Length: 216
Image 1 (cartoon, rainbow, N blue to C red):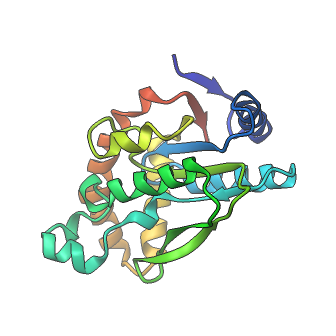
Image 2: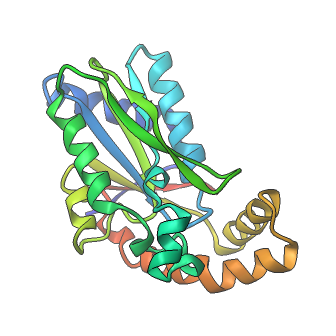
């Protein structure tokens, strides 16, 4: 059964992660934060990582967005206008990287980072060094149970579902798209034609989460 927490109760979330760390006997803990576009996943994840770090727990933030396929690849596949949909990510590559982290080898694992200013991923931008105790990853499709996304879910110790009301989410999305170069009209159209269909896919998966977190 999915548990619930008060809106953005960071200390509760941090205590939950530290308890998981104890249960696992010091092995790396990988937490997933899932939610619809604009739900506040990135903000929550960054805050949890900061708080864990302040508590002396070496933690890395590893967003799923780094595994966006390159724009040239999306164009070649004919899905450029669906960027952000499940098939526009390298889900198998994401799972393989999480598996390397889970193995806790002697070398730093380098993860890609998505740069919204150029709308492309940058390879080898996020280091996950040996001794990392917690990895927090956030993204839309962490709870999808179809392959290859199901491989991702199997590597996560817990997944939290971030929820927010639809009006707030839409407002955030439009503002984000405008901030990164779309006109207001283009932003509204993209939200309606791309973000909302993706949100419907994501909503259907959130009931699988271990914890519900409200962000407003």
